[in-house]
Every structure is written in C-alpha cells, then in structure tokens.
Amino acid sequence: MSYSEKVVDKINAMEQRSDERKSLWRDIIQSFEQEGADGVESILAGQIGEIREKFDALVNKLEEMA
Image (cartoon, rainbow, N blue to C red; front, top):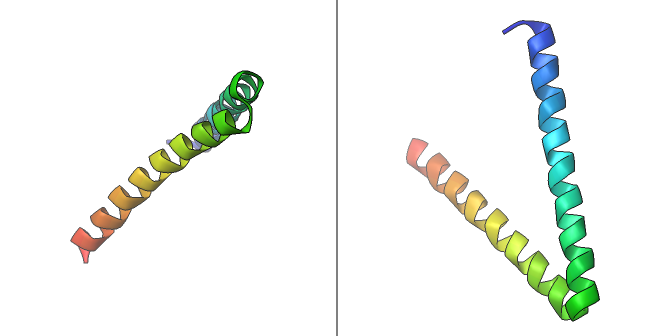
C-alpha cells in the first residue's frame, strides 16, 4: 500500500470515528430531552458495556497467544 493510500485510509478512519461521536452525541441529547439524566445514564451504560465486551475479547485473545 502506498503512502497516499495509507493517508486516505487514516483520514477515512478519522471521519468514521467523528461520525460515531456525532451520532452518540445526538443520542445523548435526544435521550436527555426525553428521559432526563436517567436516559443519558442508560445510553452511556450501553456504550460502556459494548466497550467492555470488546476489551474482554481482546484480553482473551492476548491470553491465548501467551
């Protein structure tokens, strides 16, 4: 892969993460307007759960490699 292709891939990844953050922020705002702080807590708890699952999968993979 050429340098320019790597740069384009990096830019695309950064844009994707930005879109994910914008989407999460919209969900938080909407949840707050509809359910207040409890709704935001629910949204964030879901996000934390997803991150925890990915983290646990990575740790398991590393343990298998050891």
